[in-house]
Length: 111
Length: 112
Image (cartoon, rainbow over the protein chains, first blue to last red):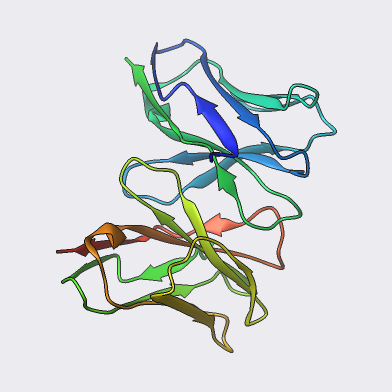
C-alpha cells in the first residue's frame, strides 16, 4: 500500500513552461515533505522541502504548495529547462526517520 | 564538499552468492540509512543506524544484514542472492536522525 501517491507518472513540457507534479499522503503524523530530483544512475538529491505549518515555499524556480486539510502537496517548476529533465520523487517522513517516497514522475522538458 | 561514498559502484553476482556493499558517510555524520531501488521504482527503506545501533528497520529480507562500525561507515551484507535482488542500493547519511540527509550515488547490483 503506497502511503504517498504521486501523479502524473510521466510529464512532457516545453522549454519555458510550468511543470506541476502532485502528491497525496495518508499518514497525518508525517511532518516533513521533501522533493527529490534523480538523474539516471545517480542518487536522489534534495530539491526543496516543506513542513505542514507552511502553505507555500519557494526557492528559485521551484515552489512547493501544501494543503494540510486535503493532505496534498505539489511541486511547481517555473520556466522549465531541458536540464530539469529527470525523475522527481515526493516523499514524507516523521521526525526525521525513514523516507516514504511517491512512485516518481519522469519529467521531460523539450527544447 | 565531501559526499556519501558508496563502493563498489557496480557489482555482478551469481544467484546464491553473497555480496557486501559499503557506505562511507559524510564526515561527522553518525546516522546511516539504506534504501533499495528497483528498475523504475521508488526507493524503499531497508534499515538505518544511529551511533552504531540499529535505529529503524524496514522491508529488509532476512537474507540481508547490516551494521555500522566505530568509524560510522556501514556495510550491507546480502546472502543467497536472488535475481530479484538486482537493484540500485543507496546509502544516505545525516548528523543525528534528522530531516536533511544526503544520498550517495549508489551501488548497482546485478544478480545473474
